[in-house]
Length: 166
Image 1 (tube, one colour):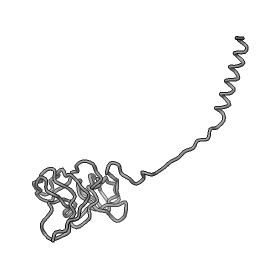
Image 2 (cartoon, one colour):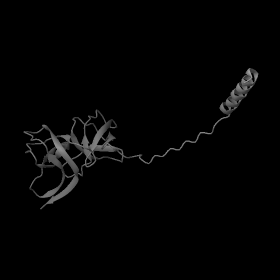
Image 3 (tube, helix red, strand yellow):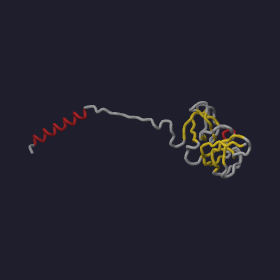
Image 4 (cartoon, one colour):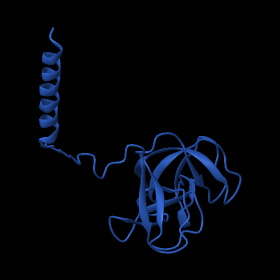
């Protein structure tokens, strides 16, 4: 093949490639937020309504959709906070009951037997399901025993189940 022809064909090819690269190619971006607001891990960040001075406490929905507060005996539990909040509006991680995989650490308010069904107690702690009249929310099963108030134990969590004792 003629060397001049090879050079000409090479130049034509280079010009063609240059023209293709110089022409802007339209880019089409498609974004879908179908998973917005979901939690694959069962953890979600909330803002504290007030200071939370200890970890592993049961919390309830707070003043609005993005806030939590420490749960009491008759409250519907949302999850367990594994952070401390030094002040109101501090962000904290909440392990959502019924959504979190695995076990969760929780703080006992009194002695709890191994395998006992647990409910929320005062100040965000947990206790054994009582036999006294009242409405309680079972939030799990004790995976280990607690000896006294303040013990942190492993609990197999569940979605809060209302139990009315009459």
